[in-house]
Image (tube, rainbow, N blue to C red; front, top):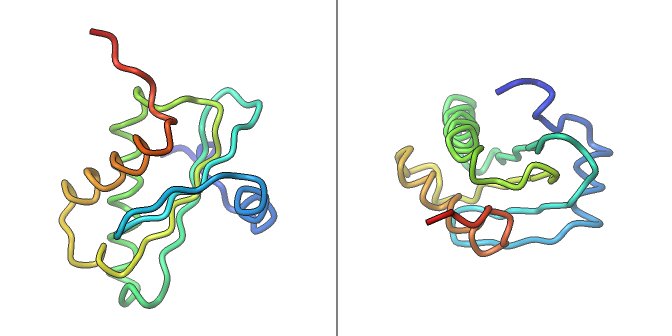
Length: 115
């Protein structure tokens, strides 16, 4: 995923937390905020409670890849912050993607599929 698609600065994370909306399930918390920009950006937060550095990086890779695969379905003018919860450390990639799809669907930021 390109660096232009990532949220890195604490100020940007805090802006999404304070001004955005959130939805959650057992594995993930999704914060989102609509912005005036040509593409979406994502920020990932994986706590040390999830596991060691190897596990945390694995979870972040899974989430980045899931966003990459769902890119066509997402509204482009949003900033997303995803916080991983404890159950995510035992999940495989397809389960993480399914969980991410669930919170994105609940939040209403996925585009409607044309039939």
